[in-house]
Image (cartoon, rainbow over all chains, first blue to last red; front, side):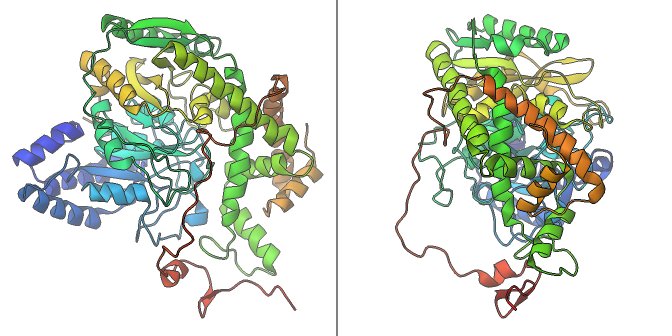
Length: 484
Length: 95
């Protein structure tokens, strides 16, 4: 059952080949058996999952089921789930039982999904390897000694190891697309504002966006359908119509114009990854697409811009963790300042502290113009590059990451080396554009991700372009050895 | 911009973060490296470029000034470290 896509599982449920309780039990058994070596889950909610599955089975029997009814998924532990621990991968929230549901959680519940639990992640979504989690590393299902990517590393690993049919993720600088690439699954970061941020613990509010992580683009369309839409509880939610994402999946790609930014194929790109990307582009040419070289001249500014904007917003957002209202509190504070300082000092990990301090510094008196204002201007330049590109092409393609998954511990000594892993994904967040990563030909048994970037609200187009590729190829069907 | 020990201590104070004494030097080196990365921005010509505050250039939406949320104080305070009579308790601020 676990080898099936959501679409296939939904068909099996509707035909009565198996029940949601059986399906949920099957995934729970896999989690029990496999997750000891992967560590994709922070919390497993077996009892609750089986109860939700029983409700789903009633709906299926009554003929009242939607495409996600009874499908077992995992929520990234950044989404607040009422009555269930919501840790955000941090000691700070190790004791936090959320009093409410995030809008994403509410909407997926309404769609009838079964939640198996909460996925491991980098602490407060700050990381590219899942090595900053308070709950330990996640191991890449393709190679136990390698990272799954981050920050949605648990989500990606859970789907890749088929311990869940799908997962939710969030992407601030590549946190859906990069782990999707390194674990060989399909991950979509929609347009900024497409999915509500209400109840999604904030990291950098002008960049954060939730999205689905699935085996296929077709499955991602179903998940996005349930997750997307305007939410009055999110002040930056986009009031923009939600199309039927599955309706256009099979549209012809004849005449599609694909832009390849020359800056994404330069120095620093692994040669084997380049070969895999080129092979994928040949498939698109076979489908009638036209490939043209384009330029995003300010690409080199993306990482430096991000490491001002994201830490600045994080330093502000994470000021809410004060040891007074929720989360970790230090023992025996001698005064209020001591309460703040020790609660935060003891409960935040090193990467979170670095980013809070960079942000605090960048926003401090005398430095604001040189850092934050300057970065907002370079952000505008990066955004304008895309605007001009989309006057020439329909979709932009390139590698999602410079290389396949690296080894655990390989990049933890130098934060800047780690940051450069997101060199191809960050720009889409700065511009607010949708991006998708999907598996292409692996390199030495490790997955490689092709990234697609679309124009604002062009999620349906991205899913269509990805789905057509997956109809022609079988890379998305690969399952790690020993886990099939 | 290279940060030294006292810079890090000042920033940590502004951010209300207690740091281990023996980690301050390490943070100084790491933060200096990150700032060196960030300073590549100086190479960009941003004369006459507007700062970008929102990806979709959207204005802040306002709503009617009406109560829309129910009172959930009890649920919200259930996760607080220390409360009494509906109030959050912290060390004494005023003598």
